Amino acid sequence: MMTKKTNNTCNTCISDITRRDFLKVTGAITGGLTAAGALTNNALASSSDRDIPLEDQKALLYDATYCVGCRECELACKEDNHLKEEDVDDLSGNTFTLIKLYQSEDGTESSFRKYQCMHCVEPACVISCPVGALEKSDEGPVLYEPLKCIGCRYCMQACPYGVPAYDWSESYPLIAKCDLCYDRTDGPACATACTPGALISGTRGELLKIAKERIAENPGKYYDDRVFGEHDGGGTSFLILSGVAFDKIGLPPLSEDSIPDYGHTATKAVPYIFGGAAGFMALAYRATMTAEERQELGKKHSEEKGETA
Ligand code: SF4
Ligand code: SF4
Ligand code: SF4
Image (cartoon, rainbow, N blue to C red):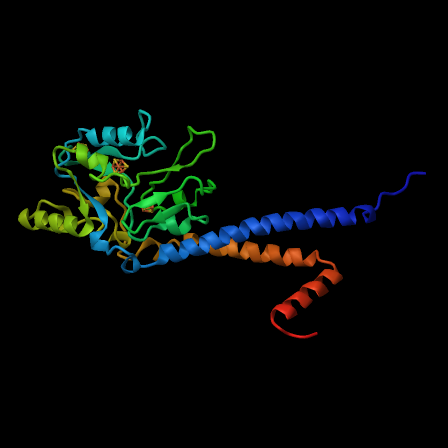
């Protein structure tokens, strides 16, 4: 006669496996939460809380009215970052900066635009990353740490400029983007290569002064008589002057609030989602404990608090 297989024989092992798994998963999630919490604090630290004041941080000014579309900046970026040549029309794992041409339909208006990471003052990509792989440095550039990256791509969703690119050419794809040539002492490679003077590197304060002087000295030349990135989306360290409307060269209409402060509730929620998941897993783990283990745990807690049984 066949004996009916009951769960009794397996109860212990199922419980053990489940609990081992819970330990691993809660550990991983709690680790993520800790990193996310630390990161959130870093990301939400106002620019005035940073070691280097905003006006003294590294920045880059792009004056589109000086740009002749020679693309020397693209080449210099590729060389300096050891990136492969490729024919693309968007930023990618091998293209950290790209020059594009805008032309009106009737051909009466045109402008070049340099695409790259805007190095936001309070970056949405940083706050959306649950493991701290992106960080706003005190010096200004927004940096990426591939060893921490888990490939979730929340940063791609969060960035209002569509900057972080996934490096599909790699077997383990990672995010790729400009780091404002953080390690170079003589300024970003692209700016060094720009002989027409469309790119100027310096501190954010110096560059805003230069940009505003150009606006004042050339009435009617610059769109809206203002610098894109001084306040847009909370501000950026890649500043742009343009002779045509910003939206025509692909710049999004943003209020002066920082991106993490509005519209990107989902990005702000990421660390809390991790937190909620960790809490849920901890509760579920508790449910697998035996009565004796619960008693033992309670005893330990009492001892730690100095209570007597
Ligand atoms: S090197 Fe300067 S002028 Fe040439 S495309 Fe780049 S930004 Fe424009
Ligand atoms: S432009 Fe995008 S990727 Fe660059 S710092 Fe801002 S949010 Fe991050
Ligand atoms: S700052 Fe450096 S990494 Fe960024 S676009 Fe320029 S050359 Fe490339």
